[in-house]
Structures are given as C-alpha cells and as structure tokens.
Image (tube, rainbow, N blue to C red; front, side, top):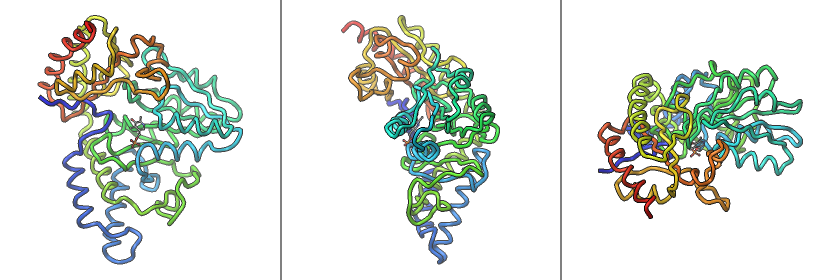
Length: 375
Ligand SMILES: *Cc1c(COP(=O)(O)O)cnc(C)c1O
C-alpha cells in the first residue's frame, strides 16, 4: 500500500484544478495585456479567477493580487509594510521560514522585531500581543495555522487588537486556506497570504489579499500587471487552477472538515496508544488534516525513512539549518525538550485519504517506533 500523508508539504493536484489549468493553457494562452481576442480571452479567465478567489475568502476582486506562491506573498506583505528603518514589528517564534527569514532580513535593516512565544499547545496569547505593542509598531504578523503542529491561532482577536492600535495586521494563512473557513472581513485582517499547492493547485502560484484602502508599495517592478502592484506577465493557467481548487475546496467545506477530522482523530487516538508518545499542538484548535506527535527516544528522520519503507509518506519536524539538526523551532518554542523534539512526526491528510489508509498507518506505526527504540 502507498499512503500519501504529507499534504501539509504539498498536495496532489485536484481533478478540477488540472482540467481548469489545461483549458487555460490550450485556450487562454494569450497575454492578458494584449488587445486582440486571445488576449481578451486570457484577461477574462484571469478576472474570473480573481472573482472566484475573492469570493472564497470573503474579499472583493480588487483586493486579490496573484503571486508566485506563499513565500512571495509573505515577503511582499511584510517587507512592504515594515521596511522602514527604525520601526518595530511583532510576530511569533513559530512562523514558517518564509516569514521568519523576512523578519531576519528586516532586523539587518534595523527594524526591531518582537517574537511572541507560544504555550505548550502552540497557541499565541492575545494578551501577550497587547503587551508587545509599542508606539513605533508598524506591523503585526501572526500565522493563521501552524504547518508543523496544526494549531489554529485566535486571529480575529489579534486583528481586533491591531486595529484598535492602528497597526497593520498580516496573517500567513497558507495552511488554513481551503481547509477551514476563511473570511477576511470577519477576521478583520489587512493582509492574508495563500498558496495554491497546499489545496490542490500547482506549485508556483499564490495570492495576497490586501484590504482596500491599505497602500502597499509594489514588490516587483515592471510592466504594471496586477494593477501596478505586482509586475510580470500573469501565470494565467496557474491562477485559474488556484481559483478553481480554492472555490471547489471551500464549497465542500463543512462536509470535508467532518470527514478529514474523523480520520485525523482516529490517527491521534490510535497513535497515542503507543507508549512514550505525546500529541503536539492543541487538541481542539487544530487543522482538520494535521496529526502531529513526538515520540520519546526516537529519531524523527529515521522514523520517516522507516515509514517510507512501509509505503507511508510523512514528515518530521522541519530540519533547521542550524547545528541542532532535526530540532524544530516550533516545538522548541512550545517548550519541548530536545530529546523529545527530535522524535517528531507529522501526518497530514486530506479528502483523498481513506479509512483503510488510516488503519494501515496505525497498523505499521507502533512496530516501527518500537524497532527504532530497540536500535
Ligand atoms: C508552504 C508554506 C509557505 C510557503 O508557500 P510556497 O507557496 O511554498 O512558497 C508559507 N507558509 C506556510 C505556513 C506554509 O505552509
């Protein structure tokens, strides 16, 4: 049996995304800026995709800017909002590298950064956010849901705090979009990043929501596409696929959340029966598709290799570039000691997974953990 349980890393393209993409490649190949009919056809596809994406997020079409992915959306939002010498940004120590390394870049440019910590279950405290705000704070950026442990943050409460202080609020919603309901107006965020390949679209396409009225300087300068904000000939096929995949995922949301949550809970329940195992991340404020664990006395990388040999694709905590190999910055921030941190496992599932695959994982995992401990 071959089981793909690494959907938080990337997803297989959905049928609807693939069909929409092929149609855009074959029939919408004009340049959306060209004045002839093929150009106009491409423009029509592009604007339909923008409207679809906006609707799925509760935004207006003119608030959606397509990018090359989540990394670019985060870089744009953060650098454009905070790249002022001497300013101050509040973020968290559990962000994705696409945020953390932007912040490092800003620190080198003399922007002060405050990193909020997380509690044992990976939750960031709105009260702590209030205490971190300063007179010169220009931006707050907190991820909607964590990619390693799946914890969902109280974004609405934090965006309220930002607004009350007149501070721009950005959220990296790359893991959340298409998997839980996202409404930018209800959340009250100013900017929100998404990435197509985390919900059934191809890699290399994403979007940044920018609230109307927020002035954001362009990230890429050139031919003036995306209303002058993000130049470069539009990736029409990728954008159409992103919109189709997002609209499709969101339209089926309540049902898919139930289905995926059931499988996830079965994984959690079954895996916790293995001695010396703990769940990482919050039990309730958790993405439907992420089951994450830490095993005592197990090397996470070897665990992933053994699972692979059994036909199961999974991930361990992100391998950092630092000297402490296999130690996840997220689990460290949550207070897990290094010994346990090194034995982390993330099983990330979606609607493509089946009950029998879950049973297969639960049948293989205990023996593999035991064998690794014997080594
Ligand atoms: C995958 C991911 C990104 C990066 O998105 P890309 O489209 O791969 O650049 C950013 N943030 C989070 C939380 C992610 O999971």
